[in-house]
Length: 300
Image 1 (cartoon, rainbow, N blue to C red):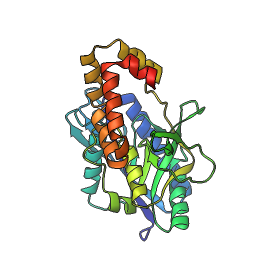
Image 2: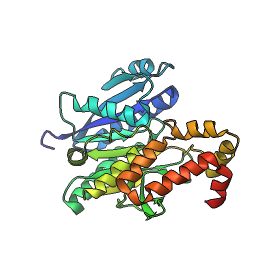
Image 3: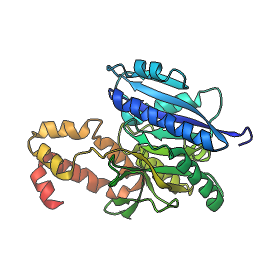
């Protein structure tokens, strides 16, 4: 960079997870300080945090705990959810008084390792050298105990069936298609071509879509060479969800699948954009799971 530092906007959204949000931000600043203590160009970091209707004092605690850091808090009414909150944080970053070289998407339940920025910017250097242009970099994330890879970058094993697998670190960046927003570094080059998160997404699939769309535009998408952070996959297993759904009425299952956290609309829009041949199949499968979950789980 001509002025000898990287300008990075970190984007997060939070809703009543104060302790996790504080721990995530603390780990972000530890990684920042670690990088700036040993590397040049230095990073100039600004945080844009969407406070999506928190009632647990998250915004106030963040402001006092990190008073010496550059944190911009955007307050919303609690109905933005993940994709909406990240869009608002991103829009605030774009309105800032100086352009950013990178946008770093973070989940507020993800804890960065001290070497996180080292690995992300090493991926950037690798991609510039091998592909001739900046790209999109998915930070590999493991469970808290380090025993399994939980998020990061993935590849499709079968586009027809929609099956994918996460990539494990191998010491060098690996091309991928799917990206998780737990730790996702977007270069200015990618932003200039893709823009921010698609406004059609409410909560789910927005981070997957960003990676697939970047690939579609023939820009490089890679994982980091090593693990960048920790976050347990706390989503229900297939069996746990099955047991929960079987106890519900049809009306309850309908509300479950069409509520923002499980957002059928997001999944169908994702299929419409990238896998239109699967759209009808996914819609029918979701309706079957609502109307006759016992039959649905016997089939799959």
